[in-house]
Image 1 (cartoon, one colour):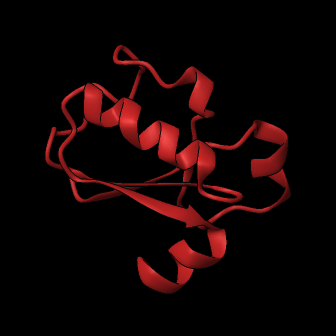
Image 2 (image 1 turned 90 degrees about the vertical axis):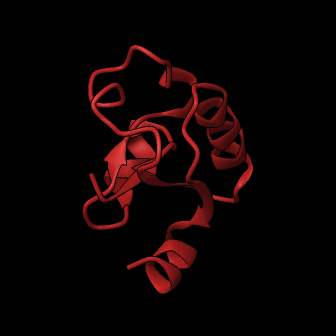
Length: 85
């Protein structure tokens, strides 16, 4: 699989505005057995973002602890859209 963009904010924040094509997995719901997550190759490029970079930093560490090796903290919507799309 190629690049995956994950918005780790709460569903109401995601509904307000999000990066086109991003999936919404709030940071407190990310776990190793999540549907969709187990389908990703461990070296897939995963870009996580939130509002300020704090929650995405926590998500990045979680994903790395599950063995994902190419996880990027995209910080926020503006940064992801300017650097990774």
